[in-house]
Image (cartoon, rainbow, N blue to C red; front, top):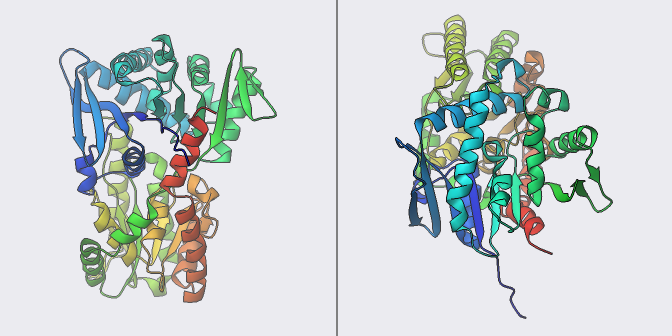
Length: 462
């Protein structure tokens, strides 16, 4: 059979994950997905280096490692303040997570956001060859497609949103929301994790912008037509299952088991962020302890919460709140040989995390609103098939649309989450195995390669 030439892939995101960090096990969920795609398809990953320079030059730093090429550019301090700390993380992030009370609307923020998107477009344009597929990621770079089109780019352009799409009433509180949304129609394909996020987008563009959804699913606004699709991101399930059987994972699992001295372990692993529902989670665990005095001393909760975006005031506030909550709960319930909450503000390599997941009888993945949440999938993949733990999952996590055999809960209800913890701890092995088999089947089937193929298949010219 004649083999068709495969298009090269150009990935563009706010930050670039070095393949060297990948090999050291320090990459996040999105990085795992993109590096896997680039290794198989070839191309380059472009984004901000994380470094600042006195004056923007557009100089590109190139690196080739582990089969992946990366290209990075430095930004000015003002760019970082206005584009990243400002518009992306003080305006768009809280707004898209329904936290309008935390959203800051500053004209300077928006100006910096548009300026950096133009700088990204100008810098990456020479790296894009004829026939390359261009895949832009996340809320930091929504207008990038428009800026690339203004530079004459005619390649197929795709955009994937890794966070929820907000309801219209929330979105319309953002100044200049209309040109931001219209800029998405410069792409050819726009992807979302769940049908809910897609429905919210379609509702907004049809009702408020006059877009039309055709019988073929194309969404037309003026002279532009896009495909808007659901493509839930997955993990490299096979790699994570292997990592759970590695020596570092076994060491981490045994270390946690030994320190727990026979107690049942409940684990939470989240970036320190108000969208993750950590204060509500601590309150739910406290409610569980109050309702189950016979289990006090027999369980412990390990919450791993590496800090992030520490220059943003709301993140400093959530850290202070959790410090106070964990201290109060431990002070109320602890005994001379037991502390109910272990609250750890640092991250761990993926293979060690796999061992921590495997040691835990229960995982609490209870965000208030989350685009997907790959921790839920990693926890399931790390389990012992003969004696798996139980996943408690928020109905407001994107993963809930796929992982229906988790214990699905409303994270705002301390009673509901407390009841789920008790149910999970007492669940018979047969039911745990049945639920796990259903969950792992989905995670293996709709993995990162499935996600990649689904999106790129839609992006490739027909």
